[in-house]
Amino acid sequence: MDKWTESVIGTINQSLDGTREKDLRFFRIDELLRNIERVGKFSSSCADCKRLKTEIESTIPDIREAVEVPGKKRRELDRLISRLARHIMKAHQFYPPWHHNYLYSFYGMVIGSAIGALVMALLPGKKWEILAAGFAVGLISGQLIGGKKDREIRTNQKLM
Image (cartoon, rainbow, N blue to C red):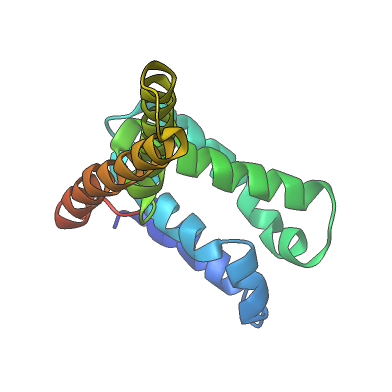
């Protein structure tokens, strides 16, 4: 960990010392700390991470107020956490647990249902069973493909 990361994480921990564990989980402070560590790690090669460093530095001094008092500071903190997560996902390929499993399952259900509806329209007979079969096949194939991608993310230690 570089000095910038250590000082920012130390400031956050010092500011939030004594805050309820429930509030820390609700405001995703652990996720914020992990993503700050990643921003510090990638800032030497990523221009967006350099820009995010200045945003982090401007938001961190008011973090205790953001956690304890609703208002503008809280919205800024929430937006910062979301921007960090979005950037880390898109630019550096870190993903939350089960991300691809959920995503591919949804796509599989939609595509399987569409294929089932198409086959249902073309073939006479047991129409609803064909639609249900398309839905099930799409869901299962989405689960398998998404599960495989999520396992790859875990083995590469790219889990957010």
